[in-house]
Length: 496
Image (cartoon, rainbow, N blue to C red):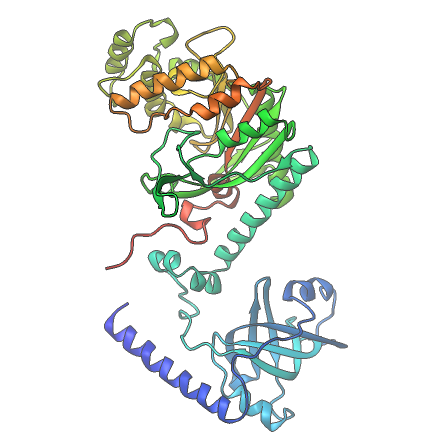
């Protein structure tokens, strides 16, 4: 904010403070305790959608909201609540003196409650003819100018409350987010899944390859970690037989970079089902996302950044190696050694490799550079290499691969799922291999979790597991350009 803008805001605040003093001197509390509202604006718009122009009803309603505009000395007020806007009309010649005095002390941004009768104007505007008025909250700071709105992106994210006041698109997007999460819960509950909760503070960060945030528990004198994934605790519940189907709507934290698709704090839903494999999880992914889109948007055809995405079943299912072959002409399934894989990747060109990459990591690197950007329509990328999938069952026909898939749309991974590894001996060996990679410098490699292995030794039947990134899904379903647009309070670097 420039010095002149700050000075003008300070002056406006001073004027409004004077109005607060005036209100109090007249016995009016500018911050009262309650108000009895009979209708939201959207309910009135729907109820009276057939009311003819120039019609006046005898229906008395009470509405409440924020003042977005005042015209003709208070004769017309545009009132905004969380569902929409409504016009308020005041007959200045007929209003009692005390109401006229109160009108003169109102400003844009104030919250008011109005009681009156419904009518429709000559121009077709649904209107409440004011009979009584209450000030519900005096705003001391002004809103952004009406016709230019809040255009500063940084301010929109840092002061989300202002963004929500002035940008209908932001309100609609975050309201849709809430409905998307509710639809996921509704669908899963209807399918017999039990919602559970697991810890957010972990002694061992596990369930994903990611850098954790750490904290300290003073009473126990322990270093603890904010969870990077709930997977290992959820599978412990499956071992315990809590239910044959469970899910958790969870917040996770990863101490990594920030981008239009990444926020250090994010939401996902993780789902587990006994006696299922990754084929069942692919079906569940498609059915769940289609249900959510149809419920919230009324269609499975969505537009993102000008491109129509078809969410309807079936989605293609292609292996990571086959997709790499299609794009590069190199069939890594026929390459046996790490050295030959690295050589092939170097010939392809533009592949960032590390000194100790395994065969699977080379395949993953080629896939990331040459394939991901082409995956616009929904697709399941299946059969990932074993050495990048420490929690997935080995593939039934190729021991170098696992029964794992990631679902992509709009070039992004939105879901990750496995035929879960249930063999405790194999799981311990996978963890030990990960620890070796960690000793070699991979700080995202999985730590040994002996208690989880002990849980598996008590027996886990065949299990399918699935995780869906809620933030990215909401981005696609609401055509949001950045993950910050679908998170109410995204992580921001403090201003100087």
